[in-house]
Length: 303
Figure 1 (cartoon, rainbow, N blue to C red):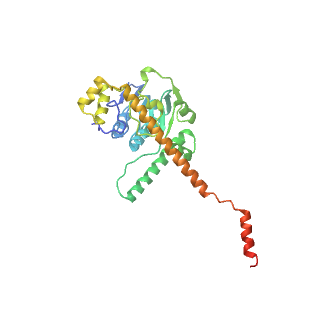
Figure 2: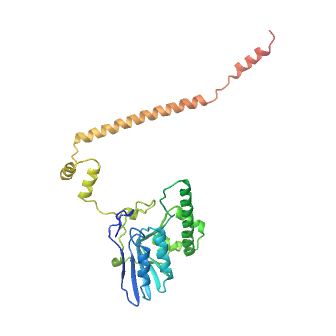
Figure 3: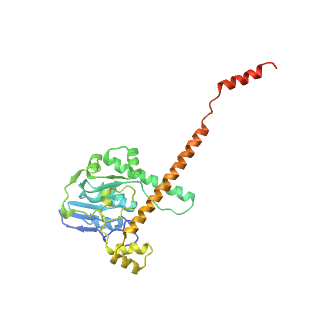
């Protein structure tokens, strides 16, 4: 049973399946999250080990998920007796990028993305518990960094810096870094939906992926209006009639903007005058040399 609390809010029930199970080749679709909300390692490993094909194609479009399930899946692919070929059809993000590297060959669609970052966790407890959790995350990052370093030939410390920055790679960048072996032409029948998952949990999602969102319909607008405080009848009335903006409303709005600008200008003048006064006060006063000499003369002159 699928839990309905996925952080990635997938728009498909499941994207994991195995096709073309023949003696020559078989295809495994990893079009889902890894772990609790999607592909469990136990299920994947059992079904993968049951394949006896000469070549197994692993097609990936996944935002990642549980690091330990992902590691188990990657090890099963790496240890399989068949030749394995990864095809990154959409995104291979987080732990799914480690799964992608487990095959004998790694190919990437020209419009796909590869992402690697530091491991995340949720912890509850006291300071000691938090330190233990942080130590565990550091160990996980170290293991993952070695995987990426082994594939690219880069130093582990360099990889850790890229992980800390949450690095997203295009196909060309992945080739240049050495993460993948070749770029595949974008075939319509194998094209993965790049907007299959909500990626807002990540920090540096490329604009190409942010822009691939579903079209907003009336139901979405009505929900947004009700979330903003409108009743159902008010939301439906707005949808039916639209927002009526009169010329006077436009003029009033412009007057408000002008007044706000005037206030801001006045505030700026006050601030500038205050700063100027403070600067003048802070300046050392220039000495009157003549008066100083006269004072000294009076002090040493006889009565």
